[in-house]
Length: 483
RNA sequence: GGCCCCGUCGUCCAGCGGCCUAGGACGCCGGCCUUUCAAGCCGGUAACGCGGGUUCGAAUCCCGUCGGGGCUACCA
Image (cartoon, rainbow, N blue to C red; front, side):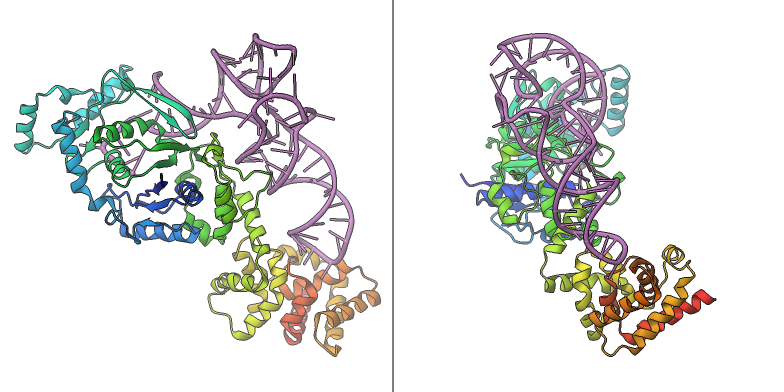
């Protein structure tokens, strides 16, 4: 049997890391079994769905490297893979359910439902639908419908009864039908609900494994019941542990922007995101934390998925991002970090600046975890120095500082060549003459030139900056000291 | 409230009856290196929620309890 799995985001927002993690697991599973990974768009919520969200979701999926074999954009044997294009099909299934007595029209108004729900809750009864319209005789119901009275279609749950299934992550599940109400499958507007559309698609697309968040575990019996009523084959379900925010609650908007796009824009690498997310609810084994996509595909095992929820830890993600940045070869680092610098600068680098950056880049690469830090660390090279006041106050308070700046300026002005090694020997000579330690002697120069006590290595920085600018900045700092 | 899920360091994961005086990773703390900051290296901190069983032996099995979470929509 060929594995066929899918991810079905709703275009009502950006791709959330929780959905992305589900997509990632489905993708790994499909690739491991050389199966088919499908991307479907669940846009039954017509009010909130937009083409812009759909595009951004697909972009995020591509950015993460989750390529799909069938689905939106790439096609396949099942049409557009967009639910809004299949309302006719869902209506057909619903009509057949009604004809078969598996579903029935419900004429209860939202106001009535609301009132009954409130009363039920007040009296301590289950708040679900009470089945009022279930007992309407078919002829009366049909007449009211054709007469134009708005009606939702509800699925008639077998009562009494229960639904059991084996979840690949959570083992044996059992749900008493007494806890499941007759849920709506088609709204009065004719638009199907998620339960119907998603399940019909899973049956029609011959999905073999449904891997999704644990938040839908309680809805699974509904989906199984629909599948069985359609005469379809029930897929294997695997409910993934939820992703939590630092507060231990389901990751959501309240935890800030948790979209994949936000992480991309904050300077994370897709390969780091991929690696980190695959660790949430799964482990590679052998105490190995960093691994490639290929290795993950090779090792992925649905049976090894953990049951407990995982907190999304941006500290660890950032660390991992740094690991991936440092693993880049030098050329790739320059190429991939450059956009962040240009974004910070608000302009493109000139060829000369690009050459300057290339010299310093290996030192920058050792020091950053996120792309924007490459800009912060080199801004002094491409625009005027901006003094960090805390750095200034800390370093420039000593009386020897003025002497250091003067002496450094003089020695550097007289220097024959202008390379890191020469600069270093000149400045170390200064240290001896002035009888100063490296910290006391070099930090004022660093702050004068880069504006901060934190910078790439000093001599290389001066080399790249050039003699003229270096001398000018030493003088400017001295002038600022003297007021 | 009802239904369901989960419970090993602060966090992620390993552990699936003896190899556990519980291992790895992030974080944190300290040290080395060092012109700063990083990186790197070395070391440290820190957990089996609790109570009963079962067993020669339990983090591992069972029950209870407590705690956390999810769902409970004509949203997905």
